[in-house]
Image (cartoon, rainbow over all chains, first blue to last red):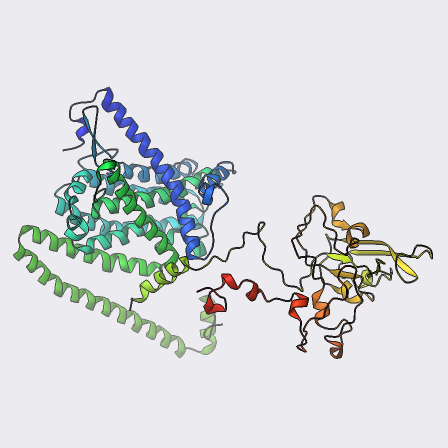
Length: 408
Length: 226
């Protein structure tokens, strides 16, 4: 197990190959972030009948670079109440997980360089998936510490929202990943990808049933805090969210991290569920084909993210929590149980499936009851209010800071 | 039918195939409404005489106090304007002008009118004060196009169209009647429709923006696209 590059010990060639892989991945990731920001702006403008950036470079492709240079030369402000150390640390904490998660993504096949088997990914640890889960949880620290250390209320609110949201969706995300791990019997991303090769039907989307895939996509969108789950930076409510107080290069780092996360997570989706670099190859481009397949699949998801951003309005906070806790987690848990049972024997699978049915109805019933209770409570409050003297009702409503007697 | 969640996706993807509404501004420009209030011009009669008689009514009516006029007597040998007096000094301070067109309404000889040009930016205050040298139309009757002004083809055509759309005297009976003298280079400018319907849109250049932009607007909204 583990990376075959290091099987015969570490000599100079191995060292060079490893360093080259790191550098190439870093550069490719940065360039693709640059392109991604441009791509997002272009696609969004397509969907809004605009032209979008078209000044810097052909088709405005260097717009991100121009913005980066501009941000670099801007004044770096720090609020008086900020925790200086943490305030400076937070952007890097946000950026690092995005960079590191990409290291375990297999972007291509396996090649042989100087008698060494080289997997086209930066690292292939045996604990790949655990690494992914750990880092995706670390990512919340960047957001949370940025909000907390700003010493300002809007960033704090944004950070609180972000951490609550990430914790809620982490569970569903983890459970849907476990389904993949159960199918592959491995935590190594390379093994997971290899097992999906050879046929589209072997892709984990189909092998785990489509449900974990859908759950994972939704949960990842929430993890990324992309629309419609971008409550942590809801401009209308929180100015800029957790990075309100950030400016200059530090702001650029958050921006970079956000888009890098989007790319990385799209790559993770492709790796876990869509066979990674798997696809029909042709001989004239031997090792390049898998990379192209991988990039193509990733771009499809990136387009999807932009499309979602253009289409869906931001969710309300309680809706967000509802979907996370009451829909995604139970569903992924049940699906995981079913998959695990089928792994054992078909009989077990049927048994669990049957057991899930009453549980489903029970859950539905409990949601119904709680909804009805809330409604009844609202009616009761309204009634109690109207029983009072009209003047005191007016007074109450003034206290509650809302207009009396219906809408204005 | 798709569930309502996906309706939004349909809407956005449909826009990708719709035409763009962006105007690449400094390169291309939106058509200007013919009645736009831009910078002033001082007109001349067809024989080249200046219309301004130096009566200072424009300066008196100006709410922003941006016009300074001093009249002088015409010399009998070389008259500048047909009457007894002419505008010896005429200055408009464009740092104060609000383009209300009251000067145009006040002018008894239609000497001052407003062009459609509003894109001029100065780098010093002295440039903001336009004198007769800048304001009087040239020998072809065209407004002078100064270095810092952004004139485009055809933008000199229509000045103070709104005045000609109604009636300078304010009486509805004279709507659509020519009540202005001919201008150097343009002759007698035609009347606009006003509310009487006697319109000659070809002559007045009165085109609705919807018509001009038809190729950018989808058929559903009155354009020609798809």
